[in-house]
Length: 128
Image 1 (tube, rainbow, N blue to C red):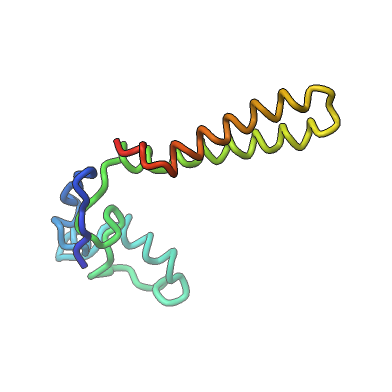
Image 2: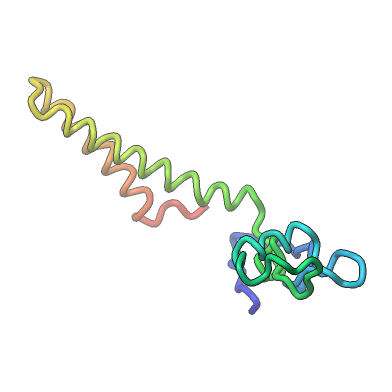
């Protein structure tokens, strides 16, 4: 199963499994401790007694043979989480200020922030 890399994200070849998707880095072609431990944690009841495992999915690339650079994956997680936090915070401020005498000012500020964040993420201008 080969992923289809887009033009904006340069996928890198996985050096751990040599782009095969299967770990065989230990002696005699057995899987390394990290990949075997990850497999054991998923299938604890079935494989807890096995010591030497072969054909285990690579824990670095999850069996794809290529990895996404850490910077791109971090940007793809932090930016949407930050936007959701800003919107949730603005809605929380609005909820807390319902009985305030400055509700109109707070409403104008919060709706401006929510509109800017929504426009940026859904307007198509965030192609970087």
